[in-house]
Amino acid sequence: MAGRALVKPEIVLNSNLNDASVALLEEHYTCHKLYDAEDRDALLAQVKDDVRALVTSGFRGFDRALVEALPNLEMISIWGAGLQAADLDVVKEKGIILTNTPDNSRIAVADLAMALLLSVARQCAEGDRFVKSGDWASTSFDEQGIGLYEKTCGIVSLGTIGRAVAQRAASFDMDVIYYGPNKKDDVAYRYFDDLLDMAKSSDFLMVCCPELPETRGLITDEIIRALGSDGILVNVGRGICVDEEALIVALEEKAIGGAGLDVYQTEPDIPERLRALDNAVLVPHVGTGTRDIRNIRKEMCLKNLQAFFAGEPVPAAVYVP
Image 1: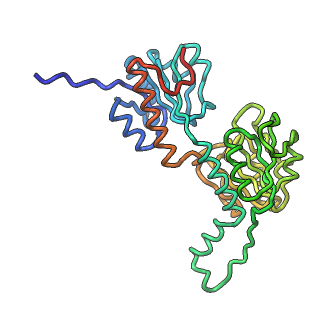
Image 2: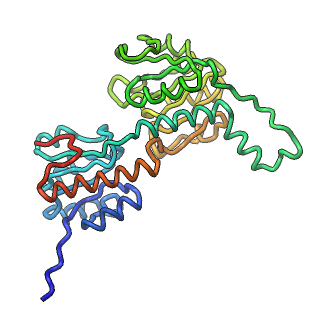
Image 3: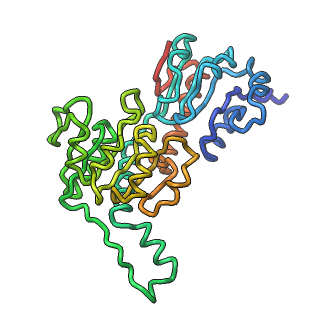
C-alpha cells in the first residue's frame, strides 16, 4: 500500500523575495503569499491556525500587528541581514525564534558604491546616452569628467560597508577620510568628529550609515553644498539619512557636481524632479542584488526553516528564546 503523502508545513511569505527563492521555498513548504493577497486580513484569518513560520525581507520586515495575527507563530526568517524593519520587541515578548541570512553583502554594496562614483565622475550615463543617440558621427562628446586619482574620499560611517568602500577608494589612490561617532584605532585613515568639516575636506562623500535615530537627516543642505561644484555624493546607506529635497535643489542648481543613489526616502516612489536630473545616476536599491548574494540568502533562508521544523538549532540565529 502506498504511503501517505507528506503534508508540507505551511508558511507565510510577507515579501516577494525573487522568483528563484520563492520557487525553492515552494518545493518544501505550502507558501501563503501575503504580499500578493488582495485581502491580507482575510488570508491571515484563513491560515492563522496552521502557520508556524514567517518569511520576510529585511526591507519589508514585520510589525506587531502581523505577528499578533498569527497566534501560532514560532519562527521568523528574514531574507537578508537587515533588522531595521523588524519589531524586535514583539519577538522577545512572544518568545519567537528570529533568524536572518548573514552574507558578504558589504562587498556587493561597496562595489556598487564605487560603480556609482565612477559613473557620475566619468559621466558614463551621459556617454551612454550620447553613443546610443547616433550623434557621435556628426558631433563630439564635450563633457569633461572628473578623475579619482589623488582625490579625497570622505566616508560617513566606517562600519562593515564603510570599511569595504574605504579599501576600494584607497586602491584608486584616493586619500580616505571618515566621520563617525568614534575613532577607529585599527585604521590609519584620518578621522573627523565633525561631519561638516569632513565634507569641506572631501571631493566625494560616500554615505554608508545605517538607519538610526541619530542618522535620520544627517546629511543636511549645508553638508551637501560643502562638497562644492565638482563634489559628488554617493548614498548606499539609507535614503532617510540624506535630506533628499536639499539634494535635489543642490543638483538642480549645480551647487554640486552630481550624485549616485541606490537608496531613497520613499522607495519605490522617486520624486519626478530627481528622476529628471542628468547629473544624478539612480539605481533601484540593488546594493546587495548580485546573483552570488541571492544564492547565499535563499540557501540560508531554507536551512533556517528546515532546522526549525526539524526541531534543531537554527544556523543563523538573531534571537532564540
